[in-house]
Amino acid sequence: MIHGGIKYTLSGTLSGASEAIADMPAHWQACMEGKGNVDLTGAKTLSDHFYMWSSASALSRMTTFLASKATRGRVTKVSRKDRPSVFQHSAFNGSLYKLVDIVLDVPSVVKALADNCRERIFHIDWNKAQWHHLPDKKVTLDFTYDGHVHRLKAGQFVLTAGQGNESLLKELGIESPQMQRRPLQQVMVKHTYPHRFFGHCLGAETTPRLTISSHPCDDGTQVWYLGGTLAEKGANLSPEEVIANAKKELEELMPWVDLSKARWATLPVDRAEPRQRNFARPDKAFASAAEECPNMIVAWPTKLTLSPNLADEVIELLHQHSQLPSRGDAPELAFLDRPPLAPTPWDAAFGD
Image (cartoon, rainbow, N blue to C red; front, top):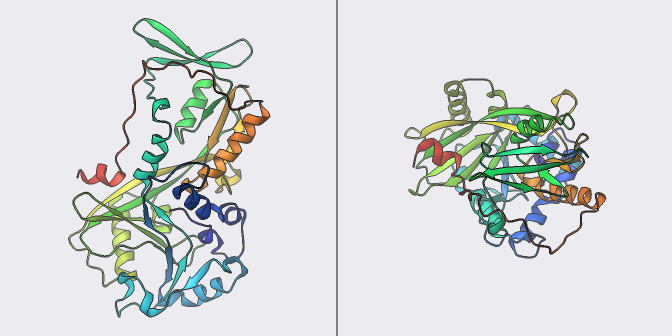
């Protein structure tokens, strides 16, 4: 989901996170139309909006929230006749609003990004590669293939491996910046219920009680991907416990939806981020020069939505290091393999 930060204003006030992310849907949309700074015309949109709903018990909180300055111009109420199919049922007596968020088909986004530079994407076998420290504290990356050592030099290396940055930093002996993990346990529901839905349910927390997004499968079914407070509180529970909680939530919030024949699985996720005080959520993307290594930048987008923000941060650091675009010959790395596109978590979980 490429969201505009509304879910970060559930306290009723604007936050650093909500302001940093507010322009992201428009930025991504421009790229998908071929008008942005990255060509994403091959990426697919699953939905051009996201909903926010409340149960009858949380209606007063929803009313208070939507009266706050934080939501003005960013949320519209949905009339009964315009409700999506899943909320056309007579049993729904809450309120429903539409957000200016978009939902992307992530596999197609990854492919579109890769297609822009396919010839420069390689897979590193770390059994055949190691970092080499030079006397000036800079590093090179050395590959040993067929008895030959190939040395990759860079004005700046940029580490964007998510949680993989942690092991790379350890191997490089870099102590700052440090990484934190904020775990989740998402739930995946594969079913034949005919209606798609993308939305947040407002509850008592400052994060959504439940988040649902719908993703198509090759066999014509779909997967509902469940997150929100359900996933945060389920981080340290067993998969069976999280699934039981998910079933209870859906039964309470959408009792008319028949998921009796659905298949269930969970996905543990570590949100990899720069270390924050009290392990708080970062407000924006992060990029920083490594203190112990003058030609190393360490970066975390913190969330997909903020990837453009991350690119801006990295480019600014490159300019500070006098690294400007050039048209020189790229290093010869043909001895390295090419990585395939990764399967979706639901394809991996359900084996379809």
